[in-house]
Length: 88
Image 1 (tube, rainbow, N blue to C red):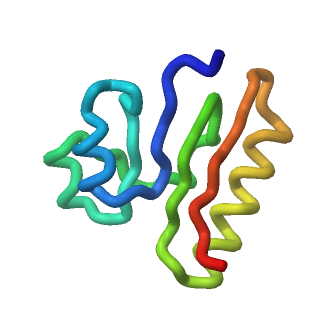
Image 2: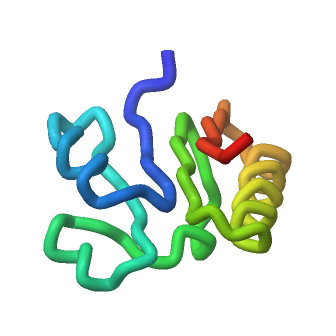
Image 3: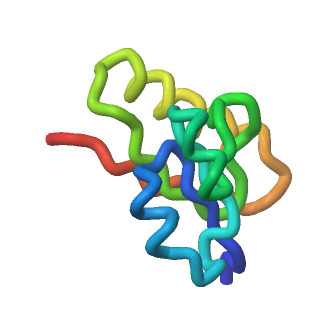
């Protein structure tokens, strides 16, 4: 149904572990993760399609990620779903 998925703001290990191309794109806050194919600055592009977002557990970052996901879905012309991994 959703096809490819993207991981936004992920742990490198998670993205590296899922290197079977179900997640062909992922973003990391660490520029050193470019070695593993990571993109940096997850907020520089809209979330689209199916995304998994696991931001660092910092209140402002989680709020920014949630707002960005909602805005991306609101302005997208394609089906969009973002699965957020946040603490309780």
